[in-house]
Image (cartoon, rainbow, N blue to C red; front, top):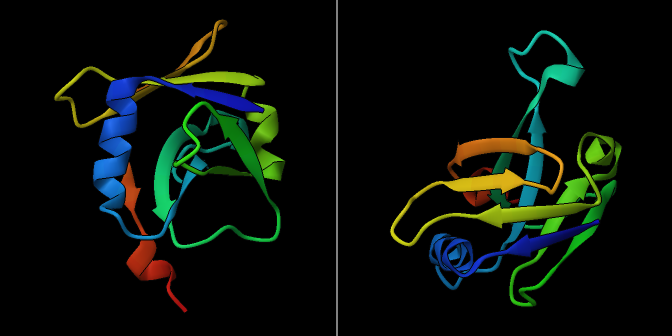
Length: 114
């Protein structure tokens, strides 16, 4: 699985990381959706990966993207993460579909610390 990140999305994520350790989890949120297939994507900044996580290759070596391996089935193999300069939200798409617009990366590192 790969994700191509545009320059504005890279800058937004680096600003959210704030020079602190963390990885960016592509999260498939099904809470309140009624069915696991009706989930929506989200991005969470977490302290570390978990046992079932896989790494998503990206064009930005300084950013590490992860995904729960059981959720990979909901996404195409090649994703595009973009935004416009000055925006605070991200867009996730592929050549075949749009997964979501107005995705606000949520920093959950404090909640995930041991």
